[in-house]
Length: 233
Image (cartoon, rainbow, N blue to C red; front, side, top):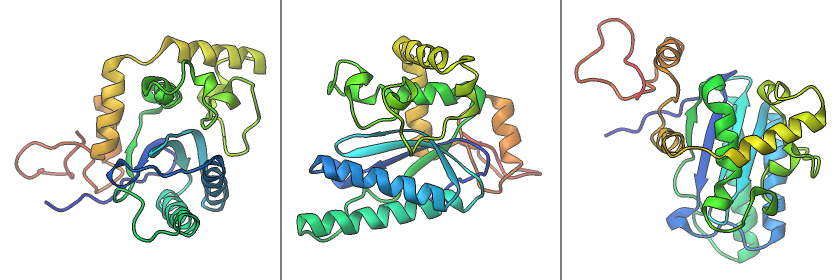
């Protein structure tokens, strides 16, 4: 079965997962983590992509971002992926692929899933048993949103600014949001939608989104659509 083309829609938040091949480690030192972050920052700026949240794990990474145009996201991810592989292979004196194929992505309904996705990303190291709390993990955007450090990669989404009228209020509100956690159904929905390439949101959101692209964005029923291309799953 042919793979669907990547879904990239300007103005919508996208959740991205890029895994190491065969779940192998993609970092060997702190310098590697810093290098990938610098690549993300550089190419996000060049491709006009706003990065809202991220976490770099030992064998994969997550990014939540919004592209300004349809080509910004694929251009950014291609540049980051290619540059990092060249850097890593040269440093490790290795050859061949590093990534498990192409990156996985989903388009999110902003009001329903953006903040949940941010918490999902920040809690990834906690779920993996690597740290007791997100504040203990150095390779994520959590510290930026809770006032521990300023991260030049991060561009907060307007929904974050609505969490409080002052920096302190926003930081406290976001910390409480993450501490409340993400329920199992939302975790499953975020993971499955990203890995399968379907858009994630309520029925009306998906239906409206389908009108904006010819690419199928959800599972469809058997048979051909009678008017527009069939919807998301």
